[in-house]
Structures are given as C-alpha cells and as structure tokens.
Image 1 (cartoon, rainbow, N blue to C red):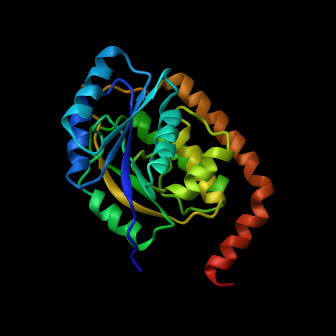
Image 2 (cartoon, rainbow, N blue to C red):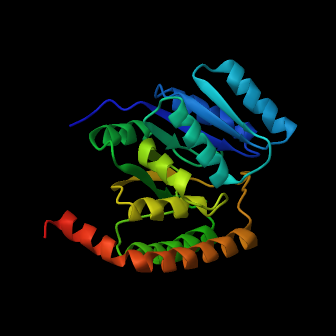
Image 3 (cartoon, rainbow, N blue to C red):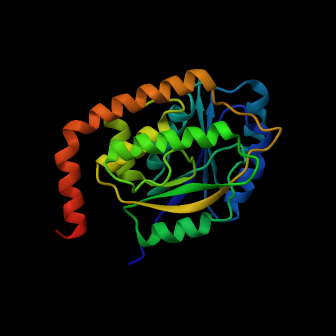
Length: 251
C-alpha cells in the first residue's frame, strides 16, 4: 500500500557551486524541497549557494564552519531534514553527474515501500574513468563479504532515497566515516540493521571539466581500512544476518 511520504532532497556542496543551480532546478521540477549543506566552502562557492537560496523557494541552508567531507555533510543534511519534519530524504550530489529524470520513479518506489532505502546503481557512458569502474568492482566484492549476500548491487552511488527515522537513528549511535567512506559505510550498517533495500538504474556521466573531491591515495587507503573494520564487525553479526535471511525466505 502506498503511503504519503514527506520527502526533500539533501545536497552536500563542496567546490561545486557552478553546477549546483542546474541540480536544484532538476530537483524542484519534482516539487521536492531542498536542503543544501555548505561544507565549509570558500567565498566563491558560498556566493553561488546564497544566490540559489535567493532565487528558489523551498531551499534550506545548513552551514558547516569547516569542511567535514562528503559523509559529514550528508549526515548533517539528513539530521536537519528530520528536524524539519521530513520522513524521507534524497541524497543527490552537487556535481551534476547523476541523471535526475528517475527521481519520480524513486519517489513512487518509496511510496510503496516507505521503510526501504531506494538506491541507485550506476549505468555509465564512455566518460567513466577505468579506475572508478575497477574500484567499484573491488568494493562490491568486499560488500558481498560484509553482508553475506549479493543483494547490494552498488555501494558507492550517491543517489539514494533514505527513510529518515531509521537512518538518523543509526547516524546518532554509530561512528561512521565523514568523508568518502560514508556511502559504503552507511549502506552496510543499514543492511546489518535489517533495513530493506531496492536498487534502480541511474545514468552517470563524468564531464571532462568536472571537479572531483575524491583524493585518490588518501581516500582509497581510508576505504580499504573501512572495509577491514566492517569485515571484522560483520563476524559477530553472522547469526543475526543468517536468521534474518531465513525469515525473509519464509523458512
């Protein structure tokens, strides 16, 4: 049965002021309020954010005094969305890499499954760097081990529709990575918590002049360390994971 969710979009912004406006316009076409998280930006990017705040209705700004990283910004945005009374929040990157046309499909899926996390899995064109594709394969291998399943099609795509109650509860009680480890970390922990997940395709492009905040060496080291932590964190949870799987299969 479909229910009436109260949904907004959460956009973490760091150095992507020039692409922010187009992303907001795409989201507002679907009548979604927007929570912008200013992740300790320089004055130029802050000016872009202020302009969007002035030009569009239904925009809320969260200002972080220092750069916390993508994860820290998303968590701040999700917590603020819950404070504003929203039941669900779309995580959307500010860099314009994601095709926004499936937003309505995600909203409809969430309406029929309000307790589920609706995740995008990327469909790439030829612009994707081979390093990104290979990195995803490695991460998805580890995710299979950490969840003892192949249910998670992709753990790195930053286009997701979160049920806020359970997500914010997890954020408040867990110590998750605040930078590029976040997208993977929270997905695994929500899986451990038994949150249902559905995956829908989303087109992703990598513009030639795009700005990446991914630090190739530091972030890959951090992701490797996070996978080790999650793997060992999974071991004591094995009985719970297996029991939940049996219940879900009707055994």
